[in-house]
Length: 377
Image (cartoon, rainbow, N blue to C red; front, side, top):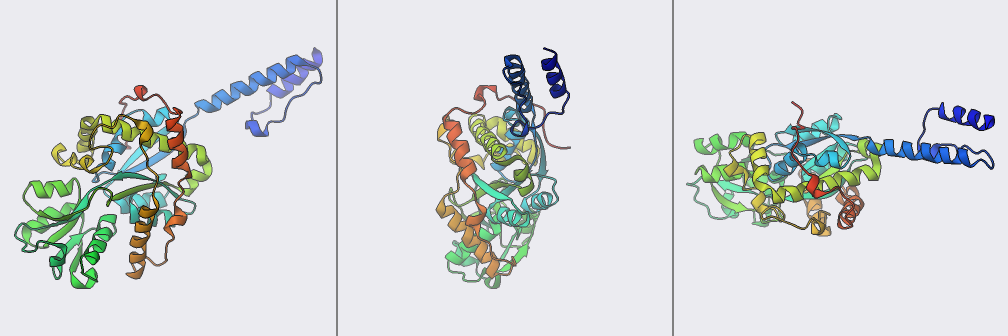
């Protein structure tokens, strides 16, 4: 027994290492030593399971329904239930969010197709993991604008934030409508979303590219009318995780993050009034404008009860359309290098997350509850 005690004392005084690296204590024929070793290993594994994975996420405070989903993530315990110690940061739109990703202030690339692809290309190892939501964007014109279709915009003054997915997708819609080179055939003005009401009212511009809730506000207040609006699915929101974060927390961390996203979409769908109220507070838009966003999403337009059939993988046709956007940016010299979108997408994580959701391998939905706001002040 003296030999056993010495061996155990020597072992217990060593620092713990990961289970896969731990050398095994063996005292031939001694059952007691083996039993203690099992207890130590079990206790250590349990302690590791209780550790929370740190993550800081960025959301866009002018963009619905992504704003509702992120407000649910950042105002309920969904992150905590999935093992995260999370913090949230809000950004006016995708470009400043991308700069925060590049600077290591956040761990996710979030936004429309082209901004997220550009973010991912700038941070080595970053992968685009899933579709986030459907969102409505369009081209609005002054109420007295004489044209009735997109082709009538030839020669008009059109504004929008150039680096957003909305603007680039709108340019492609103009090309499809017969305006072969919008950069030559229109007067294009790089303008922030917040400047659009005054620009339309003063006659500075004839039309704007915009999205909800600003889209809804401009129409409801009579500042503009709809010339063209995207259909459900035309507006593609996507999300990735940064290379450094993935290198540290790997597939297991990414899958838990994606489960949290799916749970948040489910909870948003079934608590849409609360989610809209939260995002109205976050965005500063009245709730009547905010609620237009979820009406354009396949899972948020009505309560979706079955979490098991919610899917968020990017489909081949969607990847092809994203490639078309990026190729257009390259031909217009708006990006300096060609981008292979398919090579940046990894759907293995979302497919595993969805499979495990169907298998019931997720926190109980009944445990979701509001918590203190996770947004960094």
